[in-house]
Image (cartoon, rainbow, N blue to C red; front, side, top):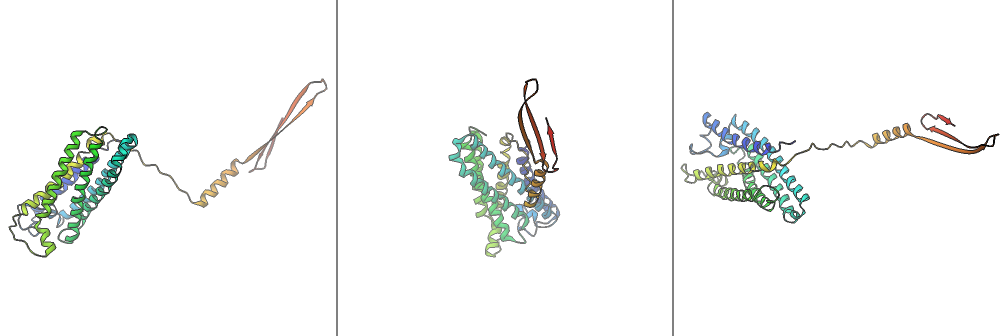
Length: 294
């Protein structure tokens, strides 16, 4: 597989299309009046509360989570290969690379939880998924920024490292802003209805959309580095049972088992000439046949 760079593009476009598309459909169908106190700004999950948009949201976001997991693994393997080729990177990047991979997988898990547990059905699990997705995502992109900086001489560039540091800083800032200003979260946690005109609502919604968009564009930034990668098909090794191995082994032994007997003798004819007479006997164990050649 040579077009690995398509995967980051697919993750970015799929997630953004799903987030904006389902929200737009929810507004058109009038399904957001019961999920938010103001219709001017919607959380991402507000567009995925009622069917059919909730079904589309869950399906496509789950697909995006799987593709994101593949991207995270490929990025991990890419850095591993760099460390094999340039051993001076092993000391500074081994732990960071493994840590980044696990935080990336937590991001995928949180994204799947957001898709499968609607805010109106299981709010606590939904918010835990959002916290895992955005929180782990922030940690992941910070670590990837450090990895990019340490490997700038071999892949990407110094400018790309600084760009990723900047995106990580913005994402972290808006993540904490979204947490502190999320009135809906406070309502769920404390079982109190916030004022209808919550002054922090617009800020919270905008911050959530910015965090999601930044994470998508950060994944998109892997496109250039993934152009340098080629994937091979996985090697399949068949493991046979013990009985079948013994049977096949005995059959192979029977088919090729044979022995060669060689005997030589020194003789002299009547004219006084000496010669060596050699007898070759081939014994086939399977057929018990004997052949003699002189």
